[in-house]
Length: 276
Image (tube, rainbow, N blue to C red):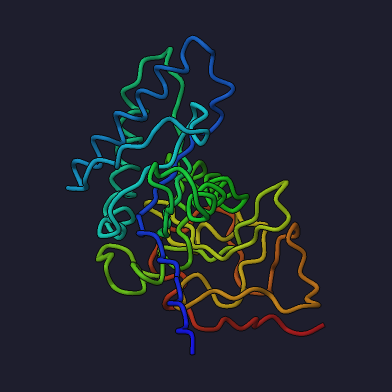
């Protein structure tokens, strides 16, 4: 009786912590100033990484994901939580300092960043779904809308964290300075990529998630930004539209809210006006 040949399985590639960043309105910068602006951002990120005791990004060959306005950086998976806390807060502070000290001829710098974790299967570290996903999180409408919330509060950074990364790091208790109240739920979608839709959490340093939510036009899923646990997509047949701002009859905020009361301590508000 012939022997059965051994089954050859495939190994899951090593995981990496992924940080993607993109400069807002880079294409509008005068061409002669583009290199200086990008060099300034690279220097700021390098300084903040060192300040957070994070390792230098892993070396990668020049790839198509760097169009001048940003790129994707890879780190050991053990660095994942620190890329959220304290990195995002300190990067926001460093960008604010840059804005206050830049010369009159230098362009302002605002960044969208995303944080994710996943396998990168090629030796040259330039392929795989995780790299695609972290880039699309950075490019999502939700991340862009969170940056509008940042602008309204005179800050310079928005962050989109993948749901799996949020659960692993924030929900898992590895971000001592950030809790669920500092994040807003969202569904990340990208114009021109109809097959891409994934839950994520949005963060703007200095704001609670409740201050970001009014700027979002997408469907955030069930639960409030102050609640923990996995996000869910709306049920099939819902009348909600991804392009319609939703109001549920509760308190509506038309300016950034920074007080810790909102989203954590207000339980239910009743209308006491007489019926007509």
